[in-house]
Image 1: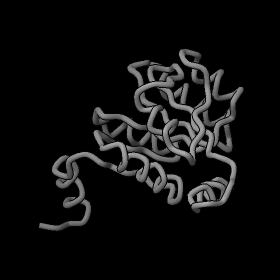
Image 2: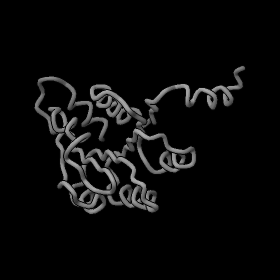
Image 3: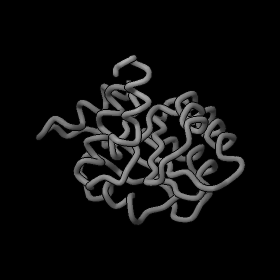
Length: 158
């Protein structure tokens, strides 16, 4: 259903409902920084109250899309699991500019709908979010050198 709404939102000239986006950093809702990219785009509507707890605000707002920047919290996976169970129709995308470990990435993949590794230019970020929503894939936007060896070993390429 989300892909249908999302695809219609990108057809020019048609007045449709905007994709409702909530952005979180350090377990709190933010309306600045990364959130401004969505606020300045006509296909998105930024929802949520600045500084409120992300789990409570997500349960109340039921956004179409939740962009979640991980914190250093010990209970990170518990929070993500709660978000996914309280907001079953919400696309949950992790965005971080700091590389995550292999184990954390596996856990994210089991819970979330997408993962974006930055840094990335603003226009490319919105396109990457669109691709994650359409495909349900995880995208690594960082330097390819960091993942090249792992891919080569899995494909048995010398």
